[in-house]
Image (cartoon, rainbow, N blue to C red; front, side, top):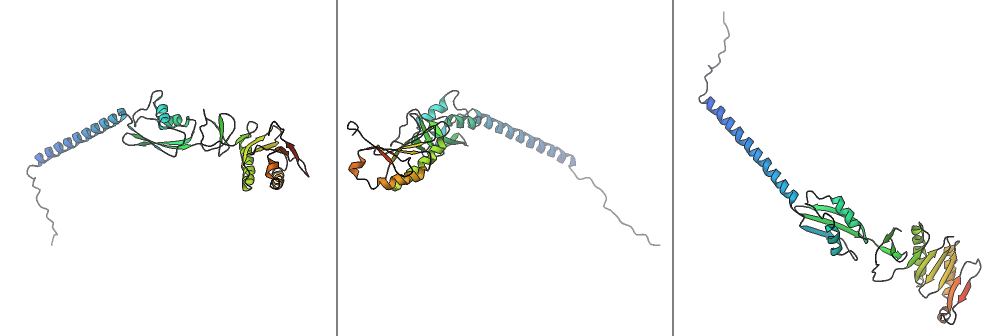
Length: 254
């Protein structure tokens, strides 16, 4: 009878096995110490950034009215700027948007020690009263002294009618400009009646109905009037269905 047999090599302990165990423990301890030291260095670096002040301020955007001095002044008010790590960008945005000519601002942190401001200024299209201007969205904004290179047209209306008055101003102005006639003032009364003043000083009354048709009828007539006659006209009342009434300047007004 034959018996199948397998043999395994005899187990012999490797030399210095205990020494290798101590070496592994030393390596683990050194690795742990290096890790702890790295965390400490990182913590120190973060702490340093928390106390380092913001050293650079970059302002991006076309500005005609908002000066660097105004921006610095508003940022230095109160507690001033903190470190870059701790600075609240929403607070910086709030301060800059409080400046009269600023329409919108975005604030971004620029590592390691800077802030970048993206500023958009208001675009005034017309003057509403002595201190308030109207932007391209039909919104009022207030400035202390409108220091404009060129005077803006004056438009007026009841409170809350700003967007509508601006819309009609753009319609009237576009039609008049096509015929080389300047519109300098537009007002809407409480009864929603329209009154225009041209660059020549002539007052045009359109009423509150068929405004565009009445304006076109005035233009067609006005273009046929001699220049010397136009200089004597004080106002034109176009509220009639079939004609217009003309008021003349007095001798004192000429």
